[in-house]
Length: 400
Image (cartoon, rainbow, N blue to C red; front, side, top):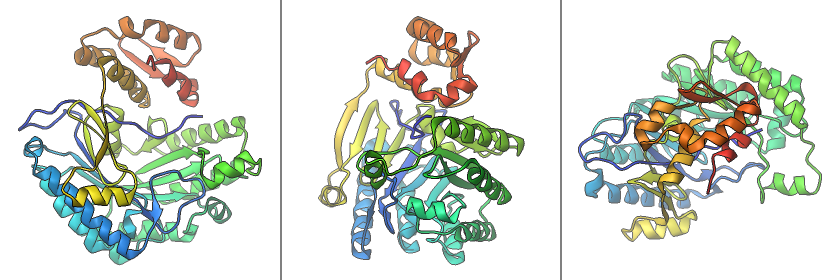
């Protein structure tokens, strides 16, 4: 199965105009959690209220630095995504300050303002406050509705808290809710996965993300796996779980629009499509990545270093990479093929001035012969088998 994490890219901006017809994204990273889950290798930390307060001040300083640059005087961000970590650990007043200051970077309000939240870190009052400050999409990290599996993962919420969080969000006025779910968990049966999907569908979210568990080096799960102590489902059962989810969600009216993502009509995640369609975006916060002005950038990952740079009045960028044309083409294929609609040959030619088959003819032929892609001279897309074996497909377009 494939790793669901998206990458990112960007194109040069023209002052006074939106960056891309596909949208322009703004990402804000909040790296704090109540405690780190056993599988997680994200840039996140348990922290005290003092550390959180100091981080917020540094984040606001970074936003103000960008707001003072000529390059950002006339940019229209179409999406704002506040992720983590667990952003809803922050006091509502801090989140309100972040959104207010971030709005100074855009000449018009973003169409979609999303925030990630974990059940157990929200309340009826906090959700009402989030909705009042303009957040219109809530992404809840539920992962499972099985209490034992939540404990296995090291999650800090219960299944009942997840159900309550959705109910509270509806009462607060949220009409666009995503549920993150995970499968192929240690000791998980097909029946347990089926029950989690049924529980999720009972809540009628507008969007569902289904991710297979990835064992990351250096995590507690990674250490347990190396010692043979993690009873994971086999590849066949993992594939069966995924195929079951695809069937059930399609039958329930969800569009399978990206390998791991399903949406009711009109509720695709606009922000994530900016990544997959290779449009520009700016990342703020420690460890945040950007693709802007033809350059890939990464902020300092450690909160202390990030704070030091931002509060000194310096952009906290520690890595820069300008992608060559070949690298841009490869990335556009690997990311574009994550979308079930695939890559348009006309769009590729319009962007790069080259025919798709002139650049990738042999790769397309090999993948077709293996039954992994469908090619109709206008669009290249994954077959159902290719969806299951996405990493094999993506690797074929990595020429560097």
